[in-house]
Length: 239
Image 1 (cartoon, one colour):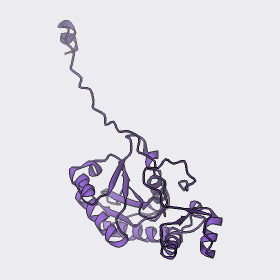
Image 2 (cartoon, helix red, strand yellow; image 1 turned 60 degrees about the vertical axis):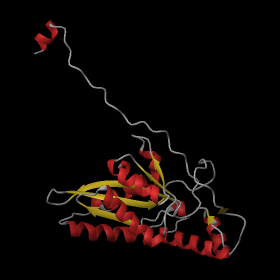
Image 3 (cartoon, helix red, strand yellow; image 1 turned 90 degrees about the horizontal axis):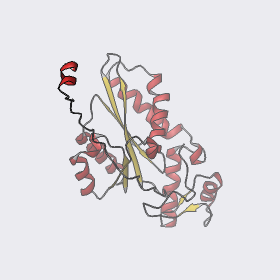
């Protein structure tokens, strides 16, 4: 075939692959819970060789993980059902940050976000660091849970993963949260909001949280800032 094509001066037509081009997402100055949720997928497998897929959801400000959905397959309809359940428990997020997977770019998911007034921030292809909060969480999830457990059945995987998620929220301290757990930090934020009547959240510095617990106002608080502000203010870094 090569000799015939060369003799006739023919060449196989090569189709140029289309690549998705997105602008870099605007940085968000995190100042309150439910301001931005970060979502992503993690893959693993059962002892039988069957694949597992997990949807991880993280509040970018409090570092809470409200849900890890586990199944052998997760469609965009399943993703929105999980998010609906989380919204019923803790309220609607202002923005969801995600990658460009088919579940997050489907018409169903886009329409669902638009109907609920939720902004979408799709990161650029090949730039997982633009969704650093959930990527950091997924790394700990794999190191501390997936790599340390042997899942015999789907029910076994759901039980062990849920146990790890609860331990992560309630017992695992974060240096970026002044060595508080996500649950403790979220509780401090809730008390401050109720007491001061505005969304004023302490920064991650230990002195700021100590001031908030002692009732000191003025220093160590980051007031409500609109989504889209550049990441130049002293907000917490990723864990």
